[in-house]
Length: 316
Ligand SMILES: NC(=O)C1=CN([C@@H]2O[C@H](COP(=O)(O)OP(=O)(O)OC[C@H]3O[C@@H](n4cnc5c(N)ncnc54)[C@H](OP(=O)(O)O)[C@@H]3O)[C@@H](O)[C@H]2O)C=CC1
Ligand SMILES: O=C(CO)COP(=O)(O)O
View 1 (cartoon, protein in one colour):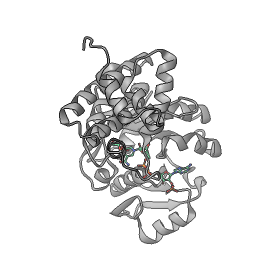
View 2: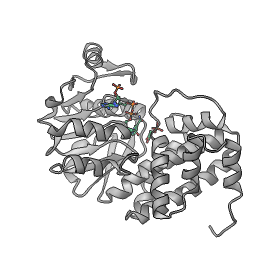
View 3: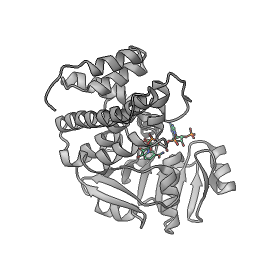
View 4: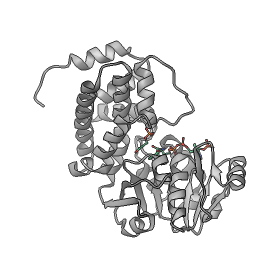
């Protein structure tokens, strides 16, 4: 059985994709009423509308029901992961796969480092890469990265004919690609929301990618990982699709409009975390720092645009 923690859009989509292949899946959510509704309707109308659960999915609000899982996928928003792990020490020892993208604001750790600190006896991995939950749930073709020191068994356990997992041992690179691209996706949304045009977005994505690689390499990642699915692949998807919540949040910011605060926008907290991290390491990340300042209302949109356009001319 495969355990999934978090019946949000991504956790539910993974449950459906694996369940459709006949694999037994136990999907955990914190809210008993939500679990009862999913059990009754065999769907998750709030997070993944229009998708029926295959018979092999069981839903539960009891975390102990995941005890026998071959692996537990942690599909929670990044800023909720540390607290969840602290409150659920019983997961220690089980293979744990992070399915979230970001950097923890308090500790500046990525998901697998948080898991390793809380569950030192667990094998850890991260599943990341370009994939919208709705696409996965509809059975559309997707390719993701499974990063772990030794992820071959997990790769086979979690792949399906349409959900193809590529394996790497570069956990830092895979994690940072997924975390940093969300910040650049917000910036791309700002560019489009402010009406600056497609050419400006392409420039922003390219310079954003340069700063992703700069930080990731300084932290020990391999450049080719950033060029793969978890970095470049997810950057392209998220910066160019209105399905992306990070992109839509940026669009609203750029257009001076409000945005529903209950929607998960991982890049917002991660921008602040990465700005702090880069500052302490003396690494230049102008786009990330600008987004962090913009979200915190430390600068206005015209100031942010002027600051980026008036940086000293230099070699590419
Ligand atoms: N959606 C997508 O297309 C993709 C998302 N991801 C990543 O997956 C992660 C989760 O995102 P997604 O599923 O979309 O988010 P959603 O906003 O759809 O769902 C978040 C889920 O986490 C639960 N949750 C929030 N806080 C806690 C907590 N403290 N303890 C327990 N459960 C909690 C929520 O429960 P409740 O309903 O009770 O609030 C909800 O079920 C993110 O890091 C995202 O980047 C990755 C690839 C694709
Ligand atoms: O990570 C994602 C696609 O790979 C989902 O993006 P959003 O969180 O911006 O919706």
